[in-house]
Image (tube, rainbow, N blue to C red; front, side, top):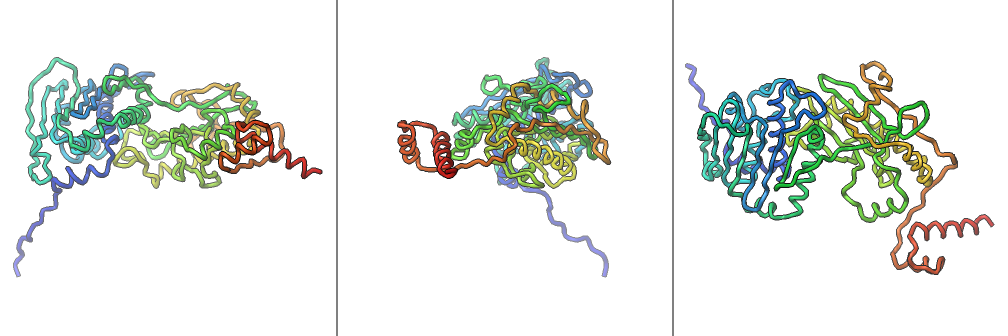
Length: 462
């Protein structure tokens, strides 16, 4: 029987998948953060090999306008070069190596398009680079999920003497997006997310404003006494590498130990705005913030589960690589690939650090005031760029080229084993006991509880 050509089936994507379904995988704020991230990539591309110094991004800016009737983001970060135009507007990046050795986190080439699909009924992208200026329009008909057209018209405009950068305008928002942008709480949360996630790049000079308000970076600082052979409050610090990824893990105290009344308050009404926990940074972008779960070592390998008594402990896991594929990062750039080999190396170090500081907290349980006197002899230092204990004073990790610094923390002067007693009672009952004991119904619950125990202890000793 002669060979015949087989029938062919279309194996490509549909417009509905990208415009409707793909956008469900990302939160609105994360989609906007993707656009800020693209601005930073442009700045990195402009700087190329000259991104050294304390503030290499000084002068680069991104401005966001987030209003109920429109969205706009503009930057002065170099624009889209001519040889990047096709890939910038394709859905997916065919050449992941296009950025060469730049320390970016973008791998999939969907961020800008997904953000536009998420927010707009129409949009335009204007770019001005040293290669020339152009505009691309996303019309309402092109963004219609039922439309099978993929071609985008581009209007080239030659050289523009204005700032070299990109401006994305979304003049007609989806109804649900317009409602979110009218919510002041959403705008405030967005500002906070930018300050958190790009804080370390802003620390290096990059500027971001939202609705005309200049944002300031949020970065982690930890208590560290001057290095000596004596015990003191200092951080655990690890510095190593794995498969072309530079790894640093720093864990310590960002504040003095919590008092009993604070533990009760957090147990009854969690604040939700804690600095405590472990954050993960990939190429200067925070992808996991203040995590207090098994993912970052809590409740594993001898580390206790997170509890409000550990509210003074924080840490940073940093990954840096010019090969974004090596980073333990998800497609949204806001979560971990916790199963990767490179993350396993870092997690092993972070659990060692957490054991040190949870153990210290437990040893000083009930003696917090004594412990906190040591904090007065230390000063807070910015973790990223401000702490280098592993390199300067660390020891070599056996079988590797990594180095780590294990701090010698103070011991309590009273070695007697102490236990915390805690229970919750109705407020009116606490007030009644307070009145009985002190002729004052307004004493703090901790004081009422301590007095009850002391009186019963005296009875027991008789």
